[in-house]
Each structure stands twice: as C-alpha cells, then as structure tokens.
Image 1: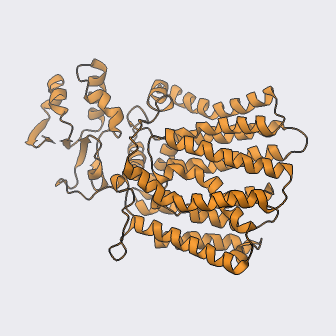
Image 2: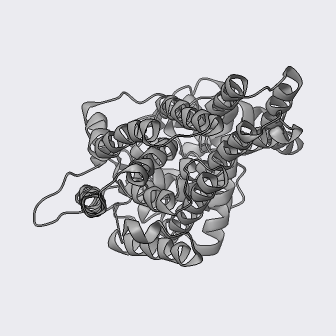
Image 3: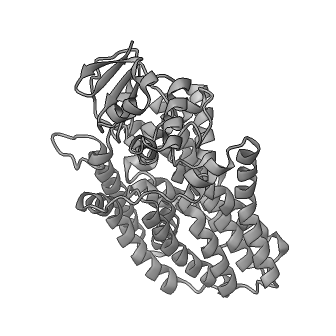
Length: 463
C-alpha cells in the first residue's frame, strides 16, 4: 500500500478519495454529540431570521455559524449531510497538506504518503469526522502554514506577499476562536527563520486583524456590534474541568499517533541530508504542534476534534517515519498494522463490536429522550439539550452559559427585557424548567406568566 502511494500521479488522488469514502461508510451512523446538535440548532435558528449573538446566544464563531446556516438551508437538520460535508472537507485538506509537503520540498521525494497519513489520522476518533468549527478553521490553518513555509523557502528575503499568512489565520479565527494563537506562531517562526522586518511583521498582523474587523463592521452596521464583541470576540469559552474521562479519551485516540510521530521526528532528523530550508521547515512544524496544544487547552472543550490542528505535525512526522524507513516488507506490514489498529480503536470508540466498546466521549453524546410533546416548540433551561434532537427549539437561548445571565438575574431590567423580547419573537409552546428559574422570571413578568399553565415537574404549557 505504501509503495503504491509513493508514486506521484493523478490516480493516487482518486485513491485517497476512495479511502475517505470507505472510512466514512465504515463509520456510518455514529453517535450524535451535544456540540454537533448545537451546530445544527445554530443553523436552524439563523434560518428562522434570528440574528447571531443578539437573538441566537451561542459562542460558535461567526463564519462557522453562517456556514451551518447554509448547510441547514440546503439539507435541513440532517446529521448525515453534516458528516458528508466534513468528509469532503477532510479530503480537500489532505490534498492541501500533501501539496504543501511536495511544493515546499519538505521531503526529498514527491509522493502521496502525507495525504494518506492525514486521512488516517482524521479517522482516529469519530468526532474528528464531524463538521466542527475546528475542522472548518483547519483549512485556513493549513493554508496559513503553507504561506509561512513559502517565506522560509525564499533564498533572498521575505516578500510582501507574507501578508497572506495573516489573512488565512484571521479567517481561521472567524471559524474557531482559539486559532488566534497561530498568528503568534507565524510571527515567531518568521522572526526565527527569515529576515522579516518590522514593516512586514506589521503587515502580517494587520492582515490578521482585517477579517475580524470586517466582521465587526458587518455586525456594527446591523446595530449588533456590542453583541459581537461581548458574546463572542472578547468572551472566551468557559473552561470545562479536565476530567479523568477526558484524559482517557485523549490518550486512547492520540497515544499511538504521537508515538509514531516521535519516532518519525528522529527518522527525519537523522534519515537524510536536508538543506537549511528543509530543516527550518521541519522545526517550524514541531513548534506548530506546541501551539496546536495551546489552542486545544484554551478551547475550553477537551474533545479529540479540538486537537485537529495537532494532526498537521503528527501526519507530517508520521509520514516521515514511513518515507525514511527501510526494509519494504516489514514497512508495509507495520503500516497496515498501524492503519488497522487505529481504525479498530476508533470504531470501538463509536460502536459496539461483540460487546467490546470504549464508549468514547460518553459525556458528550446526545441521549435518546421522550419529551412527550411531539410537534411542539420547546425551550429547556439548563445545559441538557437532548430533547432538541426530535423537537423544534423555541427562542434563541442556545448556550446556557450565556442565557443564565438573564434567567438568574430577573431583578435586572435589561435581563427581563431580553427574556421578554426573545420569548415574544419565538414563544415556546412548552417550557421545561430544569434549572428552576422560571417562577422568579414569571414573578417579574406577570404578563408572560398569564400565558402559561403550570403542568408540574417544572413544565409549563402555553395556554
């Protein structure tokens, strides 16, 4: 298999596509996650003409939110459609990654082993196969990384086209907030390995800021600038406590790829004689891995999918191991064993095979619930959004971390105004009050209370 992908031809591009399709068929109908349901709900609420960050309270980045709106408008709240688009995106990213390796001459031979390794590593956990903001942003992280390596490759000096790196990383931020750390990586690497001057560094920084600035102007023109900055731009994700279960999931998924990549680092360093540019590029990718870990830590959600940026150096050095290793028969056997073991670990993380399962991301899975309110538009106070899988969501209070500021402060006039306006625009037929906040809200808004009949157990039904 490795011998086949060492050949540099168009047929290998189609073969990579066939592998992507085969893997996605194998992982057909994987569990739905809370985050995935939230992305679908964001797209649905935006298509109900609610405005992002003002009427739809979420910390999903703006370009990701509008992309989900487009997907929802085209396919509806369809899990398979989201995963199909994610598969297509992974295929495109694999080709970009392989183009970067070959165009920048990161190895002394051109092949498609890098693309193959990228596809394999984006299959090590079923949540990596989902259309996450991190996956969307990773397209621009790859393009930004290629732009930085292009400047390192130049024999003379850094060109004014260095601003492209800033543009790409700025766009990445608009898809996933934690990617802002990569502009620091870009500037650090450019100062370490190129002759960049202060003017050019300023160009990179300004190019990074421009996409965010234009997005702010869009919200400002719509009189929502304050919402954009308060709800998303300067409001970092609330940190979730890193539990032993989170650590276990990360170790199950990433231990084997990390071990292979560490051996790959040694192989690349000692394998062949590389020129100065190649050595600097290899070191830059190691530094990129460090910043990918930082982005993961500040993401506040410790899922394998938020480590997708770490796959860039993992895939490169994993490919480096197989590019530099000798003894063809042993190498093929080792690769097939590595491939098979990774897919097996990923599969038992998502599904049950003869009673064997690792129940990966158990805390994040949407559970089957019976709300007993078929066809009703419901609103649930709290973080439990399972019922929205089969019931339409009323109001735009999607993130409880944001919504609780209104519901837990009913004595605040602005909070009451927000609740009243949001309910008036999209009145819930059923309120499931899991947080017990509605009695106090109704006490401060009697006109709203008159419209609901208490059914017991924290359930209110519209009269």
